[in-house]
Amino acid sequence: MRILLLVHSFNSLAQRLHVELIEHGHMVSVEFDVNDTMTREAVALFDPDIVLAPFLKRAIPEDVWRARRCLVVHPGIVGDRGPSALDWAVLHGEREWGVTVLEAEAEMDAGPVWASAAFPMRAATKSSLYRHEVTDSAVEAVLTALARMQSRSFVPQRLDPAAPNVRGRARPLCRQNDRAIDWMNDPTAVVLRKIRSADGTPGVRDRLYGRVIRLYDAHRADGLTGRPGEVIARCGGALARATRDGAVWIGHMREEHDRALKLPATHVFCQQSAVLPDAAGYAPIRYEEAGPVGFLHFAFYNGAMGTAQCESLRVAYEQALARPTRVLVLMGGFDYWSNGIHLGLIEAADSPADESWRNINAMNDLVRDIITTTDRFVVSALRGNAGAGGVFLALAADEVWACEGVVLSPHYKDMGNLYGSEYWTYLLPRRLGAENTCRVMQARLPMGPAEAHRLGLVDRILPASARTDRAVIASIARTLESDPCFDRLLADKQRRREVDEAQKPLDVYRLEELGRMRLNFYGFDPSYHIARYNFIHKIPKSRTPLTLARHRSRVVSRYNGGRGGDSLKPRTMP
Image (cartoon, rainbow, N blue to C red; front, side):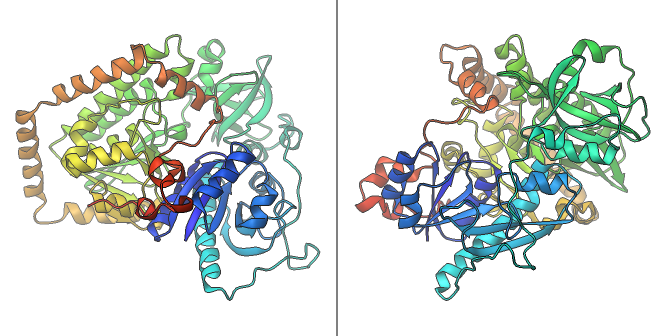
């Protein structure tokens, strides 16, 4: 089928659907919902069988949904209506939630239902649930809906909201008053639900040290108590604030004014946090061991790795190498494996160019340490998505394992034609070859584990259960270590590194990459700085990039009615 994804932005759900639909043989193009005129134009150019809206903030034009079948992906159970479905589910502590695929009509979220999928709720942030359970269920429901359409025998059901078996109902926009925290009376569990229901947008409005702020990234602070509402400790970039029956860590905050940035809490309140006592508990980096296998976790918020975080992870990596293990698994985080340099901290710096330079060099130091590790086998186990420099950090390991459902974005160019570093000019060609390296870096498209495995970016695809069950990864790692050929594998690794270094030293790759990066940071072309500013401040795009809007490319427009023929076949690489 020809499917046009109509989206407010190309978020994690839209990316996953893009990957899955192409993998299932559909022709897919993307249009950002800039205005009604451009939406109509996209439909005319692409001539889709289906318009699929996985993430919209306004209604599809009536003349479009009357002329074309338009499906809306709603992150709520059957019968649920309104713009804050998942917010309310988290806030009310729902035990089970779901995703519904329904047909667009005049009344929002009220059209006939084509498919639905349910999932148990975790005690997690709205954004984490969205990236995992909602996205998995959306893929399941969309594929079911498409199969039903192709069967031509299924009749979508129009619901009666008053029916006794319909749990869902129309609910209003969830506002700040609905999740305002009463620090004197709310127990820890309620405080966590309120903050998690608004993470990562819009955050919970609060007051701290006389300033109006938004709160994000909340975790239970076990063992800490104090006067309710009082800030009692710090750890890493987080502040601990007392509740009625305990305390919570708040990892990130944003002042409530125009162009304020979401930053680590200790950055927002730098002077106040400096006098607080240190406490343990907010630990994005942690290490654990099971026999000959070590596991290094680094669950950085939104996968962003600032200069200090890179340096801390590098220290943790060195400490992990001091342990008597034979396999070291880099676990990343559950929500993201890594997304590379921290654009938020860079934007907040006095000199974004200087901080960009410090950050990329700190990333490079870490990547080099991994590449030059020859006394044990290093594995990158991707349970969450990875983008830009985070992908190449993963490639520094000997093998890359990725869970089903993970999305990789191995490119930098959407960030103002950023050239990128992290030794990608060494790491990518040795896996893909020169031709496919060029195609991947120019395509600027997300890919799933299946395509990444065919290319050679991923060595092993893990079952989806490995996201939450470390035992799956541990079992494979132990099997690898106990292989009779393991010592020869390490010896081959050492010889290969020596040969590669003799042919072209890592320092040369780094100098060449940083030479291009210096131009991005300090050169006359401000594209990187503009793109970073727009990304951090969520400035809507005025047009859809041609890499996504394939119906708008000159190649496509030469064909009848925008049909595009071979130019729109699913992307494949030898």
